[in-house]
Amino acid sequence: MGSITEQEDDIPTYAPSLQVPSVQEMVMKDPLQVPERYIRNEEEMQKKLDMFHLSSQVPIIDLSLLSKGDEEELVKLDLACKEWGFFKVVNHGVESEVLKAMKDATVQFFELPLEEKNKISMPPDDIQGYGHAYVVSEDQILDWSDALILLVYPSRFRKLSIWPTEPKGFKEAIDAYSTELKRVALELLGSLSLVMGMDKGSLLELHKELLQGIRVNYYPPCRMADKVLGISPHSDTSTITILMQDDDVTGLEIRHQEGWVPVKPVPNALVVNVGDVMEILSNGKYKSIEHRAVTNERKTRLSYATFFIPRDEVEIGPLDHMIESQGSLPMNKKVKYGEYVRQSMKMKHDGKAHTQMAKT
Ligand SMILES: O=C(O)CCC(=O)C(=O)O
Ligand SMILES: [Fe+2]
Image (tube, rainbow, N blue to C red):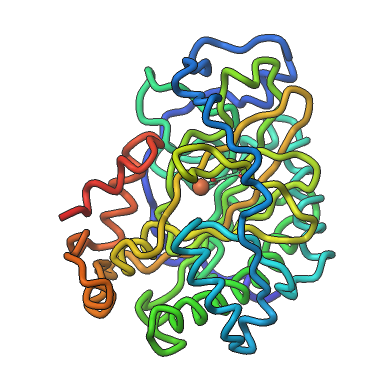
């Protein structure tokens, strides 16, 4: 566990976000109150576009088969990234104790008094810490959630001054969970390189160094669940994202065939999605799909999103062989990843609006 004590060193900062109240605190004080600034109109909720019946069709990928180079599983992976942009991963080899320790410690953290959590609140110029990201205007409609965001790898980028000291063992749980997820991500990047017709190590190499950040989302129950969103529709600016969700509450919904398909939790499975970087590199063959989280009338839900991203100076653009193999024109221009991600964070979550800046 030596990495937990490493020094802080040139840790990147990302973007400012306006301070807004803790939703958890608001609900605790008055569970019936839902302030105006959280309420969305019917059109935005797009309830009519619920496609519950497609939920069971979200692809399931077996990581143990992928790591053996199983051809059939690689074909399934390729199809999942093309047609859904999302899939569930089973047989990933992460011990259920590691997942549970992360969940238990996180729940205990959010149960601490607000003053305690605020000891590691996000500074005005960055998104690491406890608070809210992507709040850029006093007028924007707010998400019904609070977050804890930390950069976890490379370990020299850990801002240990804001790593939670309470509850005891939380840091170790984050470390163990993140180390396991890194292994899963490396395996996935290897397989993705293969289905893109490259050497197994190509995608990783392209990142110069793989950065890994975690965002825990805490969604308190909402008495007007049909009028608020836990997280606004967006696509992730990552290469890939790996999500762990609570077993007993469904909240994640993904865009598919113009509607919203709920991704039901499968105990111990992880959910993976293609991020903007993969979409750009593959020249649109793989889709960085819009998703959102809805809230529950009675239950709190937590989700744990781990983002894998390249270094700031890496130029991302469509790979030549991906353009050629599809016989298409480049859909994106080359951009520095650091600029892409920071530009995106200057905007509120608004579907795929942030991807425009890199379009040809
Ligand atoms: O809560 C979820 O299921 C989705 C979270 C998410 O999309 C994110 O943190 O980027
Ligand atoms: Fe997301």
